[in-house]
Picture 1 (cartoon, one colour):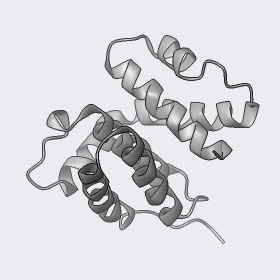
Picture 2 (tube, one colour):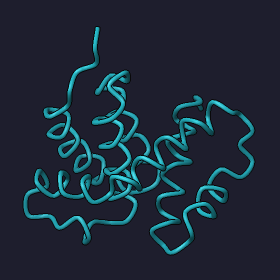
Picture 3 (cartoon, helix red, strand yellow):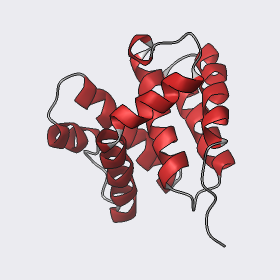
Length: 136
């Protein structure tokens, strides 16, 4: 598994643990236990902190494009994959949107259901349309 995929998975686990009630630092530490690569930890931290910091705004944007779906009623894994990938789409213009969406789909297939992958793909495709392109 690549470094950035590992970081995304660690950030997802940390978001999930934080949502379950673990303090943010404890959640991140538990999710990243055993990871000894500084670049992986740095990217996981960037995604985790950003998704937490902007959770309300991310949920608002997700809710706008997820017609007839209340973010709070989505499966916890799906909701956190959407937050994580939406944050990366919006705040990490250096990463191509196709890469972010494909990574989110693969991660949700691993931790959720096949049906979730289609749901995630549809929502992220709409969110990417509002993305500011990376500078040349």
